[in-house]
Length: 281
Image 1 (cartoon, rainbow, N blue to C red):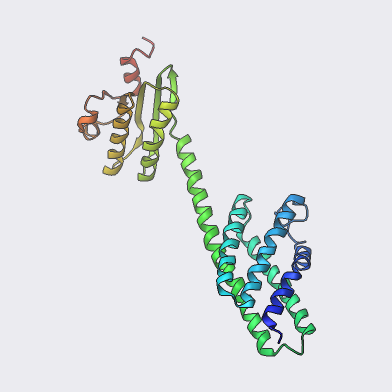
Image 2 (tube, helix red, strand yellow; image 1 turned 90 degrees about the vertical axis):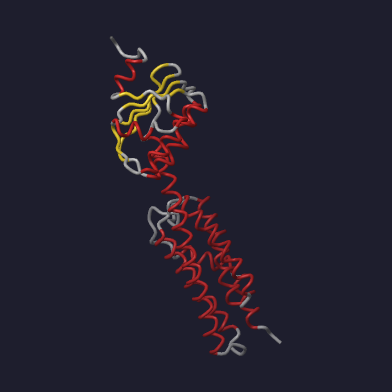
């Protein structure tokens, strides 16, 4: 006896190249996109390969193989989302393309229904329709969530790079550098500074670091503690520090730890540099 669900699954998978051809023909309205006709042969080949995954995911849902379907969804979401983030593809373009996939797959289901009219009941057609839309909805929902997570990570990574470039260590002589902190220091920025500055000092062979805080402001105990930790780490790396631009009360807070007790504090960077003989007399 014919297993109609398996027959439909086989029909869809056997027709995958034709389904993808039909799907690609519906992408004519995309401009300046990976889906556009002029995106290049390499991208078109990649999209065709990924579209086969879309077909297989939907087909496994129609077949009712939940275990395989869940695996397919996971793989599809992971690969396609990562790929679209790398190409900076807007999420609405992806969802629109997935919608076109559903339209084409349903066209082939209708053709299958006509070919096997004697075996297909209205209840079966309704069941296939429900499974098709369930699969598309789940793919879209999981894709959207994962895409957002990837974009969020990318943005945070870019912010970290911005923080790094906005907190430079400037070599002024061999072995001597200035670290001018500018702007408000948040907890996140303080965490990045403590990770970044000691590493950069080692890379640039800094032996004496002037930390100028005159262009910044911070009030949180957490931030002050992080700055104090950074100075302690620099000392352990054999890097001497001098701090300028602090109010007397902040000097007491920052210098209260025995680990950084011996750090010289100066009212201004010019005063600190002069003390080390690094300014014109």
